[in-house]
Image (tube, rainbow over all chains, first blue to last red; front, side, top):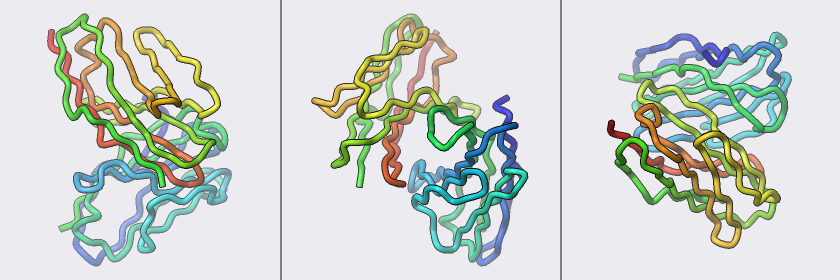
Length: 113
Length: 112
């Protein structure tokens, strides 16, 4: 158990809808990262937050947004969903800003029908 | 933009064999970071190592070792005396300036 939790585990929704994925980092970890893993695109880094602030932005679509709250949990919002957004979304956390080590959550599997 | 190539799509070995997973990266940056991750059949991701571009020392952690060679832009991963529990997909990645690229992964199967 990495100590990182993600909810929900599975999500099925329809095209055009909006969903929110939630991540709780390990206790004390200040950085949260979001990744997407799909059959088409493979693994992609989406975004990183550190202590509430956005610190690095990867291949995140404009339809997607994220935030990190004062209690350090993070949410990834996906809107105007398309079939191609079906993927496994991982959250990871690390103690500090750098990626010296990362602890991954179990992922949220999103299916867009 | 960076690029990471894992040319080996699948590797199959018998338990106790040594196996090396190749990773070749492309970057114009002088400062960058390289990573290896493991994804076992259960699907979770496990961070294995981070290496920065200024540290070419090889690293050993138990049965795992990593060979970083700037001259060939490679960051190879060797598992010594492989075990069935090493069966997984292994991803190599490179990061700098918000740009993180993953390789396509190498599926390692270790047979008993």
